[in-house]
Amino acid sequence: MLEIRHLKTLHALRETDSLVEAAERLHLTQSALSHQFKELEERLGLQLFVRKTRPVRFTSAGLRLLQLADSLLPQLRSAERDLARLAGGTAGRLHMAIECHSCFQWLMPTIDQFRDAWPEVELDLASGFSFAPLPALARGDLDLVVTSDPIELPGITYVPLFTYEALLAVANQHPLAARPYVRAEDLASETLITYPVERDRLDIFTRFLEPADVEPAQVRTSELTVMMMQLVASGRGVCCVPNWALHEYSARGYVTAKRLGEKGLFATLFAGIRADMLDSPFMRDFLLTAKDTSFATLEGVSAAPKAR
Image 1 (cartoon, rainbow, N blue to C red):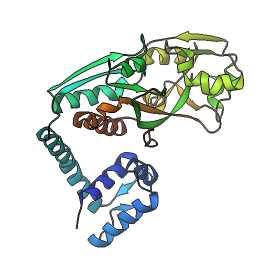
Image 2 (image 1 turned 60 degrees about the vertical axis):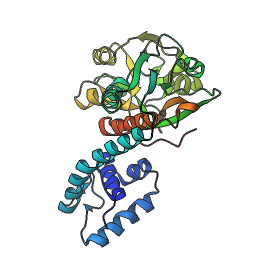
Image 3 (image 1 turned 135 degrees about the vertical axis):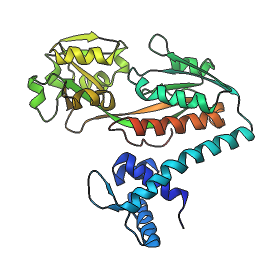
Image 4 (image 1 turned 180 degrees about the horizontal axis):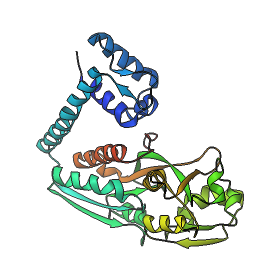
C-alpha cells in the first residue's frame, strides 16, 4: 500500500516547497507527480497536503508520513551503502578539486558524511583556483571536479548537480536597489568585485557584460564571499554571486539582491568525472549525497538537466 517512492516524493515536496521543483528533482513530470499523490491519498482515504499553498502546508497525515520518511530514508541509504560494500568496490580513491569559491557551504557537509560512510576510500580535496583541474582530471591526477564551466574532454562525463541563479549584490542605498532588474549598461559606471579567477570563467563577463559590449568602470577581486559582501554593503562596489551564497546576507538585510537581466542569469553546477569512475559504488553514493545535501542546505537551487 505505502511504498518507498511515496516517502521520497513527500520528502522532495517538503524540501523544494514546490510541486514543479519536486517533480524536477525526482525526474518526473508535474502531472505524474500529482497523479502519484492523488492515487496515494485515494488509497489512504486522507489528504496529505493543502493544494495551492506556499509554503506547502501538510496535513496531520502528511506530517506523519514525513516523520516516517525522516526515519526510514536514511536507513535505506545506509543499507544501500552496505550492499555496495558487499558487492565489492569499498576501497578506492576520490581526489577532487573545486572551481567554485562558494561551494564549500554545501560541499564540506557532503564530504563529512561521505567520510563516515566510506572510511576505506582515500579522499582528498584541492582548490582549483591556482591550477587547471579539468586537464588534471583527464590525465587521471583527479577523479572529480566541481565546475560550472564544463569543457568537452575525451573520457570525461559531466553529471549535473543543480541549477542556480547568479544575482547581483548591491548596497541597500544603491540606485540599482530600486530597479526591477539590472541591465548590462547599468554596470558601466560600477566597480565590479569578483573572485580572483580568469574573466572567461565568470558568467557575469561571458554571458552578461561581453555580449552587450559593456566594461565595468573598475574590477576588484576578493577571495572570500564575506569580504565581498562587506565591500558591497559599504558602497565600494557590486558583485555577482550564486543565489545560495547571497541569500544569507540579503535575508538579513545587509545587501540587496538584484536579478541580472529581465529573465535572469542561470547556470548549472556539474561534477566532472572520468568515465571509468562513473559506475563505482562510492562515486555514485558521493553524487547522491552531494545532491541531497545541496537541495537540503541551499536556498533557491533546482534540479538540473540530465547528464551530458
